[in-house]
Length: 360
Image 1 (cartoon, rainbow, N blue to C red):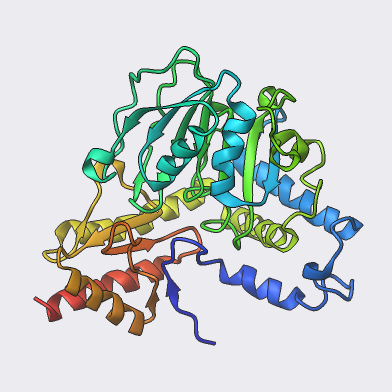
Image 2: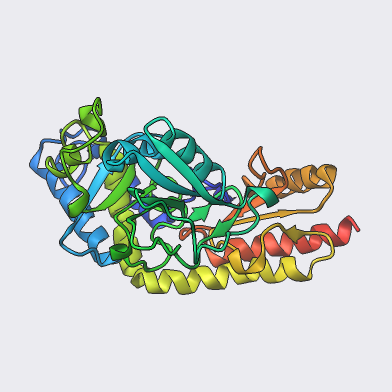
């Protein structure tokens, strides 16, 4: 078996134990004589899979009773519309734009009402998180929206914005389950699973039930209403069954690893290996203001596009895959999610050291 170190930003690396277990169950799930891929979502067996996945997820994040969990298709781009459709009652919402996905969410929000950009880090190509301690929050704002970890630019909100009492909505796609989080600080928090949790095809939403109403924007399709999911156990239509099944296995893996506090410890340790090297390297440089660095996505450059390209090609040959930065940014990016072992980060740093010596 030939496994590489996969630094992809998503779909991303999954725990090997989970993949092996899924492989063993591929043809016959627990004596049913069929794969989960073939199973009716209305069956008792599948109901058990989704119920258990939700129970483990709630336990990992310590989700209180008054928050509901939704499994949804369509990923981030659909969420950008679902959020205003369900939550923009006064047709006013404030957006903090710290990267590509915040920008897309803001643009989508404008289709439904008065979306206001109250802070942005676009002036310095999103290399920092703006000061959000005293923002010009609109009196009529239905919510304040952030993208908490910016996959493309490698920044992270280490402190949540002061919303002055307005509900906070957050996209946590690329830092989901990488550390403990207090869901009670949010009205609605969601993330695509394809980065840190499972295969592509699903987003998980956690919503305070006070925000679940029938009072949605006129013309909101049934499948875009949050209540459709919460009232039907995310089974109004056929859910992304196999993706949910794998996510459930990842939750079990996270619990076996010691939960989110332990994952946070590991992630801090892994990121430090890479950032410490970048901080002393003569050739490679991180692109983010130190205090705003993400533990999950680490962009870096040499300052020379030809050298970057050479590095990416040689790294790939050495079994270090998907290090090319997002097309908008260029350079390199290492996504070091939960399932990336410490040995993978060490292998990357060793390779960077060697490359630097050879290409002085």
